[in-house]
Image 1 (cartoon, rainbow, N blue to C red):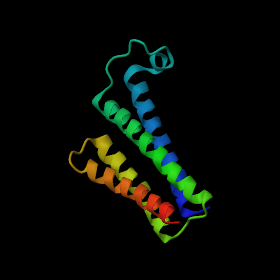
Image 2: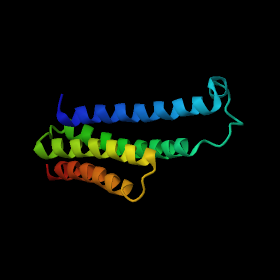
Image 3: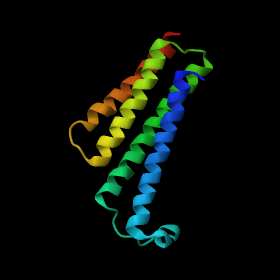
Length: 130
């Protein structure tokens, strides 16, 4: 398996872990019965859960773009040092972004977000150059 595809799999695992963390916090806050029910009248999520909800949405949006460019590059047979580096940058920047987002550390979060976008853009440039 190529580095690019492995980073895509790792990114999917990261997404799953964020979802599980969010679900675990919801169960801790509201109880299993409430979370397994209709969830129509749940209390406002805790601050950390709200952050994880926003993180989940953000990661989902970026994971779609990353998956598209990695799969297109793979289908085109484009796998080189640049795409491997870009995919690795994307993954590790998203890990850092998730940690920073979950803990609510200001100002540094956008840095990791843009670093991850750089990874996507580098793969796009390799695709367009082919």
